[in-house]
Length: 318
Image (cartoon, rainbow, N blue to C red; front, top):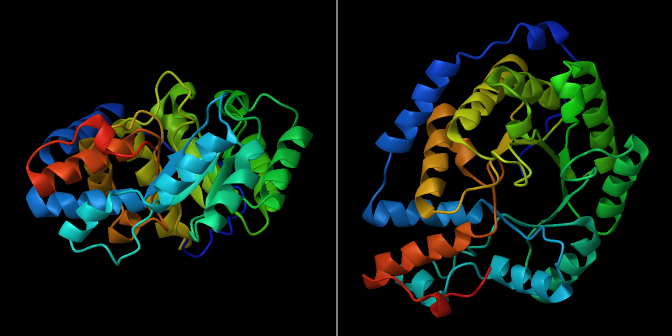
């Protein structure tokens, strides 16, 4: 990942004065969704870049060591070898950005990736994911345990209760504590934007999380009714841009939940390129939290190479 964001002192004046023009934001999102497309060899290039930015995820109650092993194998070999050869990418070390699992599965993920000789980060959700409705002491210990077991990226959730109450000091203090508990592990802060009530609250929560030292801000747990949508992406990217302009610190962005198609991936990459610049189109600054997205990307790459779509059994499960 890029150099870390150390955070700054909480600036409540900056947060409280922030406002979002919702109609303008929605128009910008609609323009991105309809006007930005890439085709042919350029689409293949964008899709391969998207693969390297995926946090390949399994967050199910029935996760087993076998599930995690399969996930790790797919993360290490995300695209069929014949497709990579046809695209002249077989020696470029194409892997996903990370593997993301529950804290109880971190040890297994670390073990399976090591056995495969894969240098892929293991990310763990924590802090009472997805609700965050647990005592602070419990949430902090969960972070420490995940790091102890080998996670190098921690996806935490903020307290929506505090955010909805306008308690930005509370949000800041908790995220700051999680950052300290992470140590050298990178902190990705989930805002759960579908539960924040307004785009203005999304902007304010983004600022509070970045001021507290988040290395990434993330849209959603994937468990809310509304997850990663483009208007929210526009708002969070504008917050990242303002924070960078004021402080000089770069913060990464991770949309998660509901991103299932190759076209979606290209649209989110276009958002990064246009709103934040090329640095935010690399896995050090941009991740996509997804479980089913990789299958559709590989399917589109198959079509690009062979001129037809693959049958389901021709692509390895992710």
